[in-house]
Length: 190
Image (cartoon, rainbow, N blue to C red; front, top):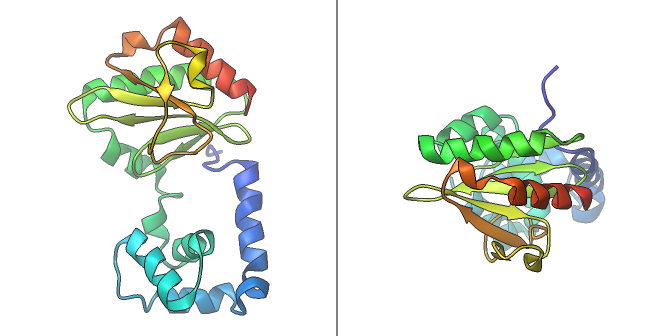
């Protein structure tokens, strides 16, 4: 059986967006999908802006509709492809794998792959990592930055706002007992 790529909470959220779409907007999902396919934009973010400007459809609803209209653009079902495109540097990939070993040692963990980072959820996202240009990786954790002197506040990271702290990892050796403890702390709160 394949590993699920979204948490139960995310599944419920998607179901809620779908079930309330018509009552909130006056149009069914099928009608919105037909509209999405007329969008002159090709970039996902530009399509979301177009939906808001032209049709008043807000971010979450627009993203859901676009995922239905253009499933290959969202990446929910193309996790391995997204991962291969993102993690091209062997040194950064080794860091990802070291983080992944720590995370997957914990129960009830779901790996979620995005275009710009790899993340893990329990009920909510609790840790993420993204490669850095020039090597290394940036780790985000759902803990307060004061939990460890290696952490700094996460700012404009592009991952979940729950990930309050971040650190740069230069090698897999830096995924040590301190990082393991921070991942466990974040998991405890997820």
